[in-house]
Amino acid sequence: MPTPAYKGASQQIGLWFLLSFVAVAGFLAVTMLSIHLEWEKVLGAWTLVPSLTILIGGIAVALIVTSRRNRQRIQRVAAWLDGSGYEVMAQPTEAWRADFAAPLVHLLPSLDLRTGPIGIQWFAVQRTSGVRLFEHLYITGSGKSTQEHYHTVVAWPAEHPDVGGSGLATAPWLFMAQYNRFLRRDVRKRELQLPEFADVAERWSILGDAATAARFLKPAVRAQLDNSPKQETWCMGAGWVCCMFKGVVDAPQLEQFLAHSRNILAAATR
Image (cartoon, rainbow, N blue to C red; front, side, top):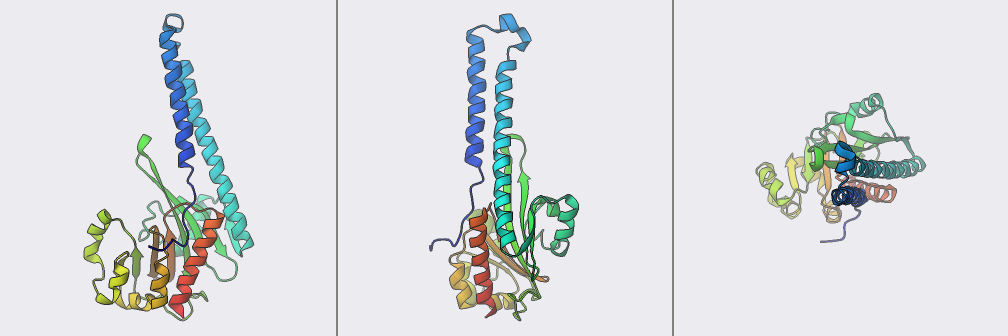
């Protein structure tokens, strides 16, 4: 398989686990020490206060550090976008999220962005032609088993010059994603089972309209899709052409993501 055109940035998961591990280790160490020194004879019910303070304090430090690093990442993304011709909102309010997402809100369920506009972390709009770009986060699970799901989406409106006269944004719906083997078993029965798409279908689930798929999947597009990471998704119709990456991006990865998706769209519209 060719080297992917881009990949995600670190989500600080390793740092979070390291700091949390230190907090838990500190809690256990102080707890064992208190048992060994028989602090309960002196402190009674207050015996666990020192160890709990270390645990809670350590987790608080982990949250503060990872949150700060995430804010710094978003600031770098915003700075790069501002210099690349976008109006950026790095810390949108709920009202701004809803206003930004209004033209796209009908697409969010198809992209599995489960919390809708409220999950938008930052957004940007191209100053000249209205391309919309945003990061979305939703969380699954609870307690110790929570998992963060980041998605970065770029959406071209039907009238954008990059879409040209292809009609892809207004064509009948097409959705393409690369699922793992388990998920694809459930999706396969709805895929386009046509021989002309067999080479693409080895990696991609192709759902929707066959004519739109034929219009999009030109030879040059197929060649560039070989360089798409597994976390990439494409959809078109309902007024937009969208490319989505399931993961966190910093400014360098965002630049690569946009360049790759623009190249594919350019190949589709030639």
